[in-house]
Amino acid sequence: KAAPPKTPLAVEETKAPKPIEGPAKAKAGEGQDTKIAMPNGDTVQAKYEVRELADVRGSNRVTASGTFKDLVASGEYPKGLQPRNYTTNPDEQAKVLRFASKMEPAYWISKHPDGTSGPPIITEDGTVLAGNGRHMGLEMARKLGTLDKYKEALLKQVAEFGIDPQDAANMKEPVLYRVVSMSPDSAAAVNLARATNIAPTQMQGVAETAASLSHLIPGDVQDQLKLGPDTTFSQAVT
Image: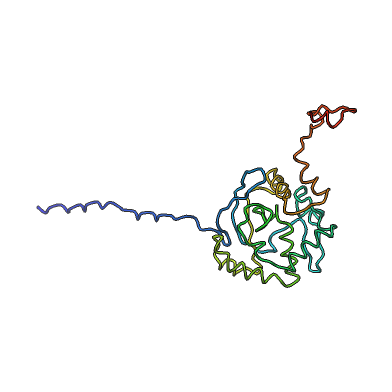
């Protein structure tokens, strides 16, 4: 009698091991993490990043003719972030023109700890919170023909900020920024913008200074001081 055919041994199916995933690749132009020092001693987390100059908006824009367009009035920039009026203040306009004409790249390209110097501070959607004058200075440099000096210096130093130099070289007008994760309409953004305008290194007019510092005065200050119609200053503070 013929032997029954042998049943082949079952072969256990083996699956290829999943590849080990490395760290997520940074998007083009993204660099190291950093921290921004605030006047009260706190810090705000940020990241260095290179973006096209045209993709970022300040409170005003330098036009092709060299005039200043008010983006707050046009609804392109949030209200309450910028106490300085670049559209009508000749001193502020002269500051922007001075930045562009002298073009000292080290003023923009540095690891300065706070918001009063170094790369402007922007939100992820490209709204300038601190450094509007510096951002407009680069827009003015475009008109005056000095922006290439900035780009040349940036390409030499950008790797120090953890950014691939090729990412910057691929851009038409690369600019180094510090990017914070907050909405431009948030209280955090307003506080950061106001705090960075209390810098001892730059003078403001009386109106601008009052606008910057007004948030430090509580709304019920009169009740707290128990002020009456005949209260003297010495009585209020003692």
